[in-house]
Amino acid sequence: MKNRNYKLLGKSVLMDAIGMATMAIPVLGPFVDILWAPIAAKKMTEMFPGRKGKIASVITFLEEILPFTDVIPTFTLMWLYTYVWSTSKEVVQEPIEVEIVS
Image (cartoon, rainbow, N blue to C red; front, side):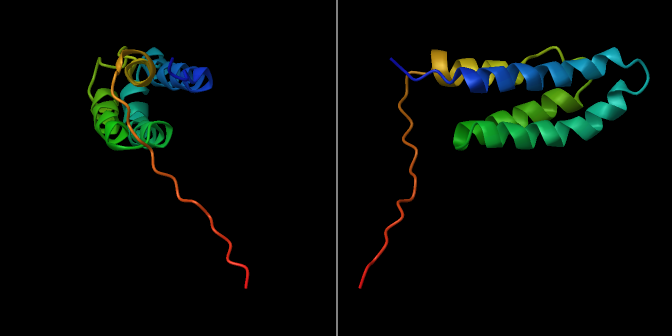
C-alpha cells in the first residue's frame, strides 16, 4: 500500500481554501488572485516535486489567474492524483552524503 501523506493533504486543503477565499472579497477578489496565482504555483512545485508538480504548477497558475475558476481544488486534486489514483512508481533520487576519513 502506498504511503498516503495526510499532512500534505491538510496543506493541500488549506491552500485550496485560501485560493477560494478570494472569491468572497467582492471588489478586490480578482486583484488578490493576480497576487495569489504565482504564490500558489510556487507552493505547488514545492509540495509536489518533479515533472508532475511542474505541470500542476502551470495548471494552478492558470486556475488562479482565470476568473470564476477558483472553485477548482487543484491542490487537493493533485494530492488525490499522486497518492490515490496514480499507479506509476516515480523514483525520487536523493543525494547521499559521504564523509571521507583520511
